[in-house]
Structures are given as C-alpha cells and as structure tokens.
Length: 159
Image (cartoon, one colour):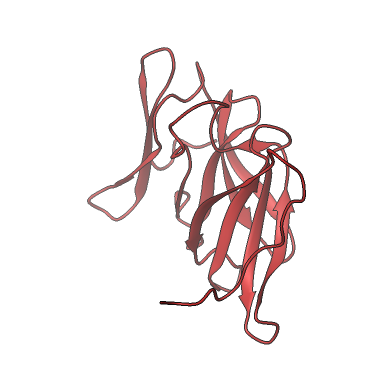
C-alpha cells in the first residue's frame, strides 16, 4: 500500500471543505501545482499548492477569492476545466464567479492569480465544462446552462 506523500492542513471547521480541481503545470515556471477551491459555497477561495520536497509538504503558492466550482447541492462537480485557452503557453483554470453569472480564466503568476478573461452567461452553468481540441491545436470551450442552451466559445472570442 502506498503512503501519503503530503496533505494540506485541515480547514478546522465543520461543513467547510476543499474541492480539488486539477493538477498541472500551473506554476509560472511550468512547475506542477494542485489547484483547489476552498469553501466553494461561501467565499470560494481558489488556492494553488506546490509540493516542496525539502519540507515534505504541500505549500500554498497563490490564492484569490470570489469563485466557485459548482452550485450548492449539485451532484455535478465538474464545472471547471484547465487548459491553455488563450494560447499563451500557460494553463488557465476555467471556473465560474461566485454569483455564477460568468465564467473566467484564471492564471497563476509569481505570487498571485489574475483573471485573464471573463465570459458572461445567460444562465448558471448546468453541465460539466468541456475543453474542445480543435484541428489546429487550439482549445475551445463548451458548457450547458440552466436555460437549456449549449454555449460554445472558440479561440479569439474571449474578451
């Protein structure tokens, strides 16, 4: 049986939890980081973690608030996706705003997280987020919304 390599510290309060979203080359230097949203229903803090082999621990690298990975009570927890949607060579996290009226692309920088782009929604997301690999290698994005529409964005359509 494998042993645990590292753990985040506990949040310390009942009914508060961490929703792991992705692991990938989010670091500004291409380093592998884990990204989560803490307390997705109250505050929605997106936090990035990197494994520090010297400490044998996950250490936080950057955070921002105001985002969520799903609506409260939903069984659909796949309302985020990661990829290089703007074509700059670095992975973004695509996630909804806390009020669920827009999706945004978040990117890690040295010690901060910045919102690179924002797409308004006609209704809250209702399906998982899907990254679309186009024939030329660029990524598009598709989601279904509560107004029974499927929204598709292609590269260059982000504001």
